[in-house]
Amino acid sequence: MNMSSDELGTAGIRYAFDLLGFWTHHSQANQALLFTNDDNIRGAICDRLTLPLASDQARIALYPFTLEQAEPVFDTPLIAGCFRNRWSYRKLLHPLMPVYSLQSLQAVLQRQGYALESLVGVYPPLFMVWWTLSVLAGTRLPSLHFQCEQVAINYLATDRLPGLTFSYLIVFYARRLDT
Amino acid sequence: MPADWTPEELPRVVGLLDSWLDSMRAPQGYAGPVSHWWDSCLVYTGAMLDWRYEGIACGYLNLYRSTLDKTWLAKAIKASRDIVAGQSSDGHFRNSSFERGPRTGGTPHEAAADIALLEVAAILKQGDDPDWQLFFLAAERNIMAQIAGLWSGQGFIDQPNNTVLVANKNATMAEALLLYQSLGQRDMSEYITAAAQVVLSAQVKTGPRAGATIHHGTFGYQLSFGIYTARCVGALCRLMEVDPRPQYRDFISGAVAYLTSLICVGGSWLGHYTNGRRVASPIWIAPCGDLLRALLQARFWVDVPEDAIQKLAGSLIRSQTSSGGIPTAYGLATRGALRPYRGLPDFRDLLPVVGWCDKAFRALSMMSPSLETCLPARVELYCVWRNLPCCYIEDDKTIILRDEHEQTLYEWHKGASYPAIIKLWT
Image (cartoon, rainbow over all chains, first blue to last red; front, top):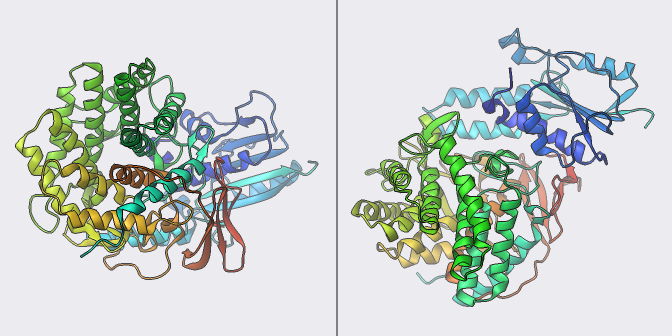
């Protein structure tokens, strides 16, 4: 099932995809490979790319929400992707949600000769604390709702522990060691 | 109270805005980061085909009409060509969702871009320039796509998967349809009348926010916003020209009273909550251009206090930085607060955004009979990002945010699709 338009429009998904676009833009690649079976994700990523998609070879490959299905054999000098984190608070609420873990990512990258260049956690626990407060304030206390929501957005992403470990989404960028 | 500005300043202010808009151009159109009440788009900074084109094209056409200098007509045409070049085969425009980032089908953004196309088409048709059809047909394709995807029988819905009827979005669509009807000689009154009805039914009749339109897209919050009410005034003023009705005049009169009540030192209050409490943070600055335009247009139909116009114009003029841009707001850091914000502006406050400055440009171009060529200069301003002190630096090539340790948190080279550096959250 394709990702819904509502979910694609959320701040966190947008930020994750924006980062993929940012890294691709700065990768000095002429083309990019995109691995996804989801037409909506494909469209959202393509909207952000400043270079065309390749069909077989490229300098960079993107894996938006694909690692949850299967661990790929990476074949490009640069890779970037995002996944739903196994150790996030969100998994407690949705136990059947397909997930992947940071530990698995680190292991597969090491095995295949890649080094992480950037690692970002989106929707870390601190975001969720403020977001929950904003939801609790709701329409009864609208001013508090919007102020808490604003603070939550200030904590939309992190690259620091322990927030990163327990973030809902992990976004990564890695480089093959021989490049 | 005397105005704190003089009409002699206007050509310089508009000229500097024109230079700033030039500095924000990318190969595919007008670009740059976006800050807004709903959200901000700071990572993707490429060209977007949203409501920025309405203000840019109409502003340049105002300058052309007042000076007959074809430089301004050429700039309006160039802007319209951006839209045509970014139109997909389904009629929608690329990256038309403003603060929601690079995605198509933005409302009311595509309708606003249609207004840009149709205004340019109208002036070209008047001059027997056959190119008018290029812009007219592009607008027509988009309007038909919007009717197919958003028309509900009662009005235009927010999005195909969101059936709420939002007043300002229907207002913008009605404006586009009025222009299309006039140019294309095709009766669109069924849609226009229904869209106008959506606008009329959203107006609050009594209480502290009397005259405002409720933004039904905010669901349980039922917020009223000055800028959205202002956009409804613009549409109904245009409608009055072809179909003057007492209820439209009453709407404009009530809305003008509401907009006037929002004017404050430095700009305008954002709006009101459903309980009548004023949203005191942020104060809008550049977006006030749409309030100013609404008041200028409403003068033909209802009484508008002259000092309201003077104050709004003064806020825009006094807020312009030497880079030429006008900051978006003051107080986004405490967004939604009932008390006015005090302290250094947030980075998102200071950001001059093409999709807001176009509104100031359009409104001020209505008041300025000419324009002075001015070159933007470097600006350095203290601000905060996530409560930490920072320095905002802008010139005609870059926008930079540095923290107190001189570390660059954000660096955007104007025209680029992404910043060179983004460390805002990490």
